Image (cartoon, rainbow, N blue to C red):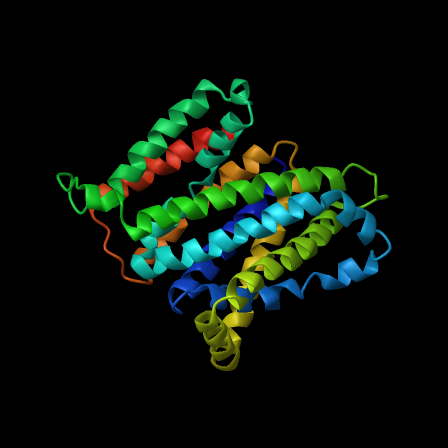
Length: 301
């Protein structure tokens, strides 16, 4: 993994934890994430305008991936809000970052099971074991209600959505890097796709909120009372993902980027304990460590 990719991925992980903490502290909701997304999507627009002549051809090739990726963000942000409103950061965040296991599941559905190594399978088992420990307050606290809670189910939906848009984004970046659209640097590829992804995500999120009167009202209130929060949230979401996309363009194998991003799991849990004063019983620590090892095995396998 090139040093530049390593640095960008680490910075992205830190920013990702930061905007998740900000969202958690501000009553997360679909309207709040849309407000942030609208602000953040404005940042990479200049590069899209600069390459305006190429945009129609790029969109014609990438539209299906953009639609899939944008649509998945509806489920991602809504599930994210549900998980954070129902539980603390140190439990919800590790579950939300479990997307590599769902990427493996999607590969099974696409008939690519032969590409999955024994290391991945071991990692999957560790992830499942780790997830079982997270909701426990002690090692004898094994109850069905722990695993059919809003937090647990919402986190799994969000992780699945992350896996779907990550696969779509990887295909899009490969096409942009193919040379079909002329010489584009790694930064230009990431900025162009980030801008198109932001537009698609905002459109889908807007549709989801437009059909709900209560959410339209909440969105207008947020636009009036939480301008600063929306700006910082939007910058965090888009800058963090832009850095990830850029890191992927520098790495020959995106699995290493996905693997190293798992550093945000202990970071998120640590911030939850130190900043948000989450409880941190021994089963949660045990589950977190097992989950971290398992996800790393999946991502690198």
